[in-house]
Length: 98
Image (cartoon, rainbow, N blue to C red):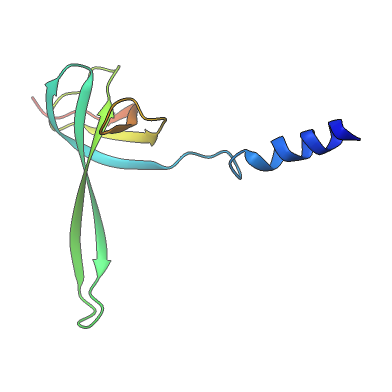
């Protein structure tokens, strides 16, 4: 009976669905070793005027692939890799025109 309780606890402790959050953005800096800064844009509706406003967020992402400034990339949530780095580059969707 104790084994069933332990198994039930471990099943509920895992993330529901097990899907990590993913975002698509543009690389704006690649000056660090194995790290890139990715700018993610989103549209938010103004509460009073109902117009759409572009909001941007910047994420530090671990870069094992060869992506450069201007590339469109998909980043995924991961465990903390450093003080500010919690994302990793999954794939390069579109290369920048060089």
